[in-house]
Image (cartoon, rainbow, N blue to C red; front, side, top):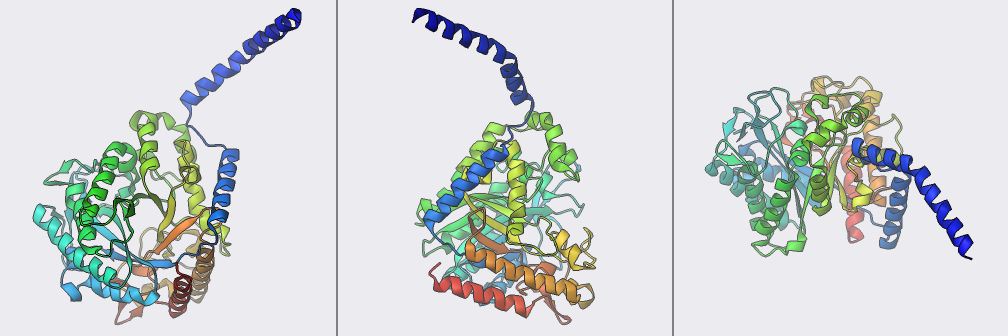
Length: 469
């Protein structure tokens, strides 16, 4: 017996010695490379999530709309404000929630992807960049309160997303802009100028004390990943402000919105890469030097939901599974940070969803064919509606667009395929707005509104409501 024990111990020692180089190599690799979630782990998480969905039952969701707010004047005028007028058009589609998409502006004077000032624009007729002060911040909050309250009057849930656009029109991308939400940029911080005034509007408008969804930012990845601790403090502040008027704190859902690719907006020199994922892996040391990956994970683990902008390219004849391409791409990139949508287990919503019908990034050229529309859903055609720039005048484009929204309602009836999706919010402005909600979407020359799509969305949402969802 003693001889067998000694022999077993000897074998164990020899095996440990033989394994040491491989173990050292694994440790070295773990330090030098990103923590990539394997395909097997992703599959297991997918199976776990599918099992959870099966337990919860069949959960159809509505296809809801967005009110895109660009200017101070959008929320002024009470019942006659552009915001309320857009709300009245939105109510036609019998949805469950209204997504108030708040847009304010940044200035990057040095072209270094750093915010130097925060501001707003007065109206579509006066687009000069004006720096924020307390009066402007609460002027916007007061107008937004009125419009949100009208949504609650009509039994709608409040959802909001906040993003910053380039106020200097230099062509910079918000996703790469680095700023601390609690740091003052000239007179006010992001929280003081935009975040808190929006939270105060929800506090005062949500008199029915129903669930609210508040995305702290939208398609602004760099600020999340470079300042995760600050954003965790914003999350706590949002809940505290909205709860002051009696909305239970557990009904204040606070989340983040990320783009379908280039999730972290980093590093800046790679942001326009056409092979971003591989370039990011090859430059992972730059990310590790700039970003506290552990704190980023804590932020994503603490939020209530994760919103994704759903603009990944599609085949000309998409399937239901193709509508989740954006989610799969997000998971691929989050895997570098040791996370995944499935592993985090948060509510998932499509914060922006639709087709732009643009040919290129100039936002002036209509797509020449439906293949172009499908391949680049993110390109649109900007400006007030004009028939000569309407991509849906092309019969092939229009057929694809109508079929796409029909497929979307089929997807929504299932509440997702591999991912449980809790909400879909259409992007309702310029050529994306085929429901004709935004004032830019119609003119005396016509409208982007497509009556077939309008009927498809209304019919689907009415069915979901009849099921009590």
